Image (cartoon, rainbow, N blue to C red):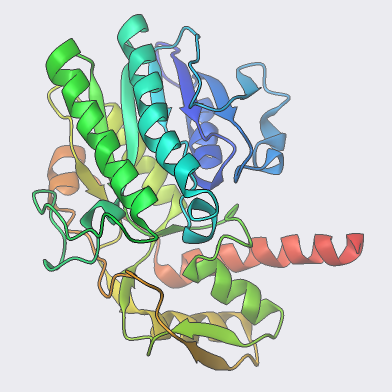
Length: 321
């Protein structure tokens, strides 16, 4: 329990990451205002919190101004999976850019500290491996992923300009692949795809030859990193990479999921999507030094917890059918 209760706004708070962050903030003794427009966020993710007198839920789209009194802002609002952010790319860009302007404006007005959930996608298809925070990226500004990649890059620009021009207290976290319970079953991400396909006994879809690498961070570890970053002195602004530095090939992930689910699923190959990066792995030296942070949950343990969640979700859907 903290000594001083803070009023904390979490945008995108009904989403995968946001809901876990709301849990953590309430456990730490804060008042939490969760804001979401429910495009990808789900009420079920925060339903267990609705009876808590220190939790408040608000339906709102941050591309419109928000007038509330808060001490801290975690800006997580934006669809984060290609399936969702490519559905309405103009709105995705507006959420990243106009949403950042509105949240920074709020932080400026009320003197709040504000954290931006940026992304490893700002590095594009990297030519540097692993990626350090001073790497400027290799992004296609006209490709199908640009609405998300460039939207997040512009949001980072806005955060640092608001700091230089208006003295806003900012934090920027670059989040790498994260997984865990409350992932959307249809978000198109590799972990949720593989688990749902395996549990249904369907073919597991592997794009390309499966040799591309990813590094997967369990959600509890990631939320701990966000919390630690917000707690740092004002001089620590980031950007700071948050993710697991231990990369594996995507085909190895498929094999792990098949083993952990006991599935008879077969792997099938599809063409690699446009601009899909072949390597993605963070250098977390800065997070280790500035935050004392490193991921702790082993991949098999995290996958087992995630599989258990999806088993429950699929069972509920089957019962309701």
